[in-house]
Image (cartoon, rainbow, N blue to C red; front, side, top):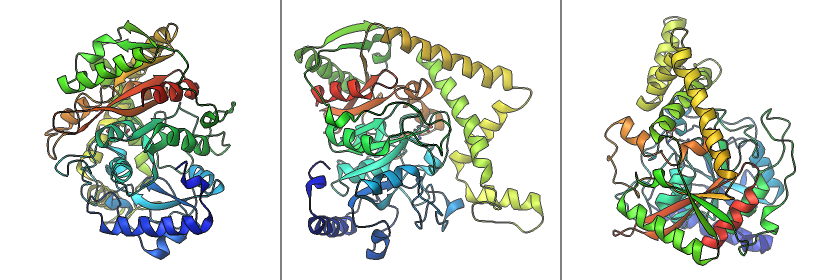
Length: 443
Ligand code: GLN
């Protein structure tokens, strides 16, 4: 991306053509449709950036990889898209994802699966699996994804590229299809840390169209990157125990590399991770059940059923939404229902506060936290036999969203079968600079 920003408009034209050819020849299913020349010129002739299928691009189809939205055309640009265009970057191709960003493997897309470019028998991770596979597979310079509980960082780790989730509120959510509004953030998936910083600078900023957008300073982190800063980095000991031996090996390698670079490592503990998982899946599904109620066949989505209102709702939702999405709507409606609200939803919010407090305590003595991204490297297709199996793979990423913190995942090792092992550096709220500096020293 850094090099692309130096190119003349003629050179960018050639780059776009080359990329289009490469995409047409690729068989990993990273994009939800093959590009055609007319599709790609809608947003200008800038540096091509791949866009996840839940971010609005005016006049493009946006489906969140769900049958319910097939053929729905965006009437406007998300703020992140306007920001790209202002910087001479152009949306270029829609990337595949888990339906409505609910999942960790991109297997729940209505378009079918995306293959991991390193080993086609393995999942690319999710939910931004298409974005990560496109970047790692050499068919995107950089991409945008969204991260509600790890959907940028985990696929980046599975495919061997860099994925960054900003502090909650740093990047506008206007025009991004809401999954869980208090957890969602959009962020970059790139080939290296510096590109992630550049793309983050471009998409972040205060936006009056998003009431949760932060009205604070946005210093350009990419212009002040410094990998020589000596930092104190915390390792959460009881977190690591749950990782596979291969992930532990990669993690320990990262610890050694950080020590070698002159950073100080301190060891800490945190709340039981099973509580984190329960809290996340209650908050996320509760918000999802409210957000997805708009897809009712009246305002958005494909209408089904013509025997009255109830029939229309029933047919539209049961035919339009896939199994995992339906399950989450039901679970979310249950935890918000009057008899169970206090027992589940309120309790989950209390646990969420506890998690935030624990992070704040650790950050009194550390600049960053180093953690695995996922307990394993990329698994084979069909490995998640139940939803719970899949939820358990999110243990390292979801607490970061519950606490609203920034984090970046980057590859540090390979397992015995050659699959990438990633780690993440979690930063203090609003301190993306230190997070990028630390990541650069580990790259
Ligand atoms: N895997 C998590 C979930 O299914 C996170 C998804 C995401 O970040 N969008 O909710």
